[in-house]
Image 1 (cartoon, helix red, strand yellow):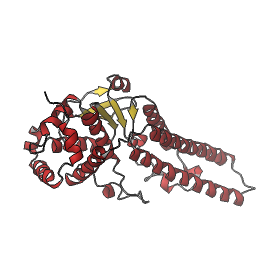
Image 2 (cartoon, rainbow, N blue to C red; image 1 turned 90 degrees about the vertical axis):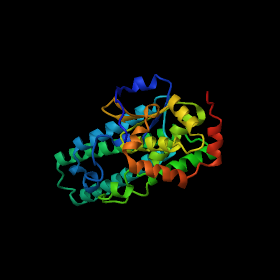
Image 3 (tube, rainbow, N blue to C red; image 1 turned 45 degrees about the vertical axis):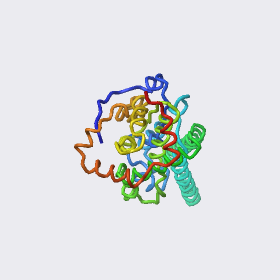
Image 4 (cartoon, helix red, strand yellow; image 1 turned 90 degrees about the horizontal axis):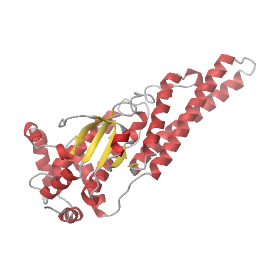
Length: 307
């Protein structure tokens, strides 16, 4: 991935420039490690829950909601599906722990341990609070989702998914969750939809966009998509390059509670990087031949004013 000059920005700074913001649902678990797969999945009793592990999760879900509460920040449909998936997993876990607790209570009616009972209630309240916040996060993500209609966006979304796979822009989903003790479900390709939405708004709506994330894959997808669309043999490559330079798509990586680091900017990408990465350059040229632009995209690109 090409490195650019990085700088830190607060949420307030990002929202003052008039750009459209998109937030990645992965921020619901930013910086809290493998808290479900590696910890909560194996818990079979409320009394075994360490509140110090789960309190940061609650904080991150609340911060995610705070971002989506900002007028200019939105999300995408597949992000809502990801949040729903995690909410369902947590709800099922809570039901399981409640059943386990009720069974143990029935067995120990006359041997109540007050300390254990208090610990159990604290853990139960905490997990219920996390579940409730995930429900709110899902509701807010659905309310703030952007879903452009028409063939141009549909084909752009499909195209970006195809070239992301072809150019190995993101980690393999199966490998990422290969050690998981439960089935995550298929990759929803949320990263690709976020990038497709941002690029669509830049090119077709003349609206600069930025993506807030903690996933380095998104920066690679933006960069590789830019190089694909502006490859010199592409029809109307100069028009697309001009638009993405003047109305850029940017990616900011979460770096603290209210700090984001700029990692990608389509107005600051140089094809010189490809001269140092011959594998990617060759794959790009092959991808241009393999995935021709659709008529809907070509029509949209042809309407970009070029001075």
